[in-house]
Length: 285
Image 1 (cartoon, rainbow, N blue to C red):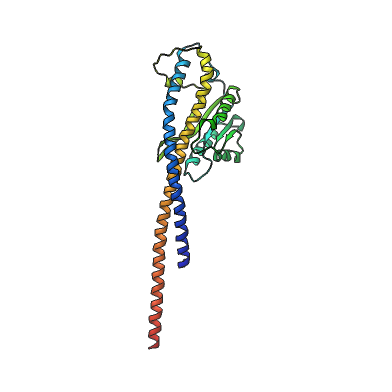
Image 2 (image 1 turned 90 degrees about the horizontal axis):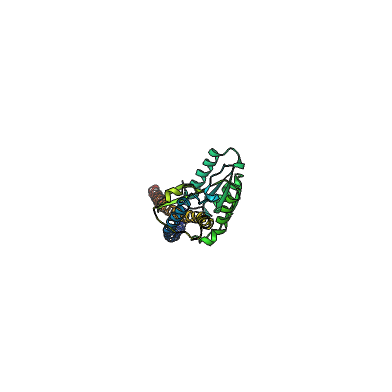
């Protein structure tokens, strides 16, 4: 049985840990609040650009662009969005497990796919398993701006245009609520699902539709990546907030349990001392 000193030391260390996790919970809550606003504020822009692109691309049979055209798939690219650190519950593990299982099911050779990693955890995960990581970006701020990921987004779109890979998927955690987020796979390129975003809106184009698509489609693809990143950041901070809250609650339960054990041990020690005193007094009579 642990001594009174050992139990007391454990109580003290657990209290200090709970203070740290409580502070981390409050920090994550503050970050989450802002990340949620950023993700929701980006939605109207995404909806509008999807509508415009769909109307231009599908409004005329003359409009064409390589990013709209499917081709024989020789190699697949996967963008995976994770955090740069742990202590975020299952946020990283869920998306990495889902993507890795999908890769194993779809591909027979490592030459058939490559990874574009946004986040240190995702990069390290695939590097350790010998998977090709073509592009990576780490050290993003908690509230990333488009300028921070513009280069990797632009490079990714160029890799598709140059036929480095023939299709591109995104894997990230879609934010649903503060306590729920879903691992999501989204096909980014080629843009073959625009019909679902087309609305009956009339547009006049100047200059030609093809010239507009030449500029707009790469921007649209880059915006999809940025939108998924904002979505992922909201999920990351909500996961961190929940994980730290659970850690704090578990610490409190452990402290209560240890305090009870300490009081029982202390009571037993006092009872033993009283018994010894009474026994010694009786022996002297």
